[in-house]
Amino acid sequence: MSGKIKSAYRTSISFYDEVLCGRTWRSKCYLSIFWGGINDIDIAERLLQKIPKNFNGKLLDVPVGTGIFTADTYAHLKDATITGIDYSSEMLEKCENLMSSRGVSIELLQGDVGALPFADEDFDILLSMNGFHVFPDKQKAYDECHRVLKQGGLFLGCFFIRNELKISDCLVKNVLTKKGWFTPPFESKETLQNRLKKRYDLLWFRVDGAIASFLCRKK
Ligand SMILES: C[S@@+](CC[C@H](N)C(=O)[O-])C[C@H]1O[C@@H](n2cnc3c(N)ncnc32)[C@H](O)[C@@H]1O
Image 1: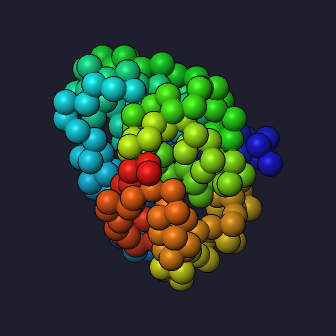
Image 2 (image 1 turned 90 degrees about the vertical axis):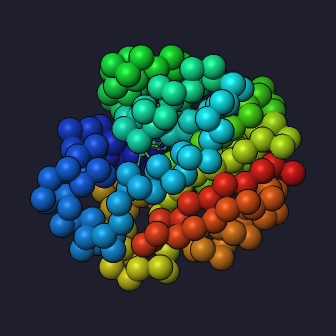
Image 3 (image 1 turned 135 degrees about the vertical axis):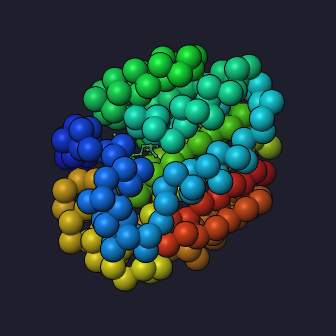
């Protein structure tokens, strides 16, 4: 499974940023037809605004990907200690280039969200954008994110949920999962909210198209 995911993201490296950001007419059509016209940049910005402007603690970003949505935010977090983890060395290489072009100080590590190389309660903020619909072992991923986050720390993220848009469900099932870009099982709005509420205080939750965004605090 991990080989399939790594290979999927290796092949997407040349078009990942372009598609998610809707930079060409083809990607605009794709987002409009299959994803209800969502704007991933807006979704990311709304979420990243939840990080305090003067944040000076430790932030873990998993999966960090190419950093396309986060580089500008991180460039302003001069006093924060930021670590990014991803399975894919190709995504990390692209991220490294982007972050250094923006003057961002970030430690980038290749690794698995299901086996994070950190002590318990190491981080003040855990950010996970567009990761949980990809991670092969969701329970391990949730457990690890919870373990490395301090009590009272913030867990925020966004990812695909099922049952919101039929066309997105269909694309995910018939194409994206088969290619290795997505990995079932997928959360619904209800299962995700219930899961988060068990271990966190849910502070904010929003759905755009078939993408759920959330902010919660570890109990
Ligand atoms: C859709 S991208 C999201 C990247 C970035 N957060 C964003 O929003 O653009 C999903 C990423 O998850 C990474 N990934 C998949 N499984 C992983 C795992 N078990 N541990 C760490 N990263 C993983 C992939 O390599 C890929 O870069």
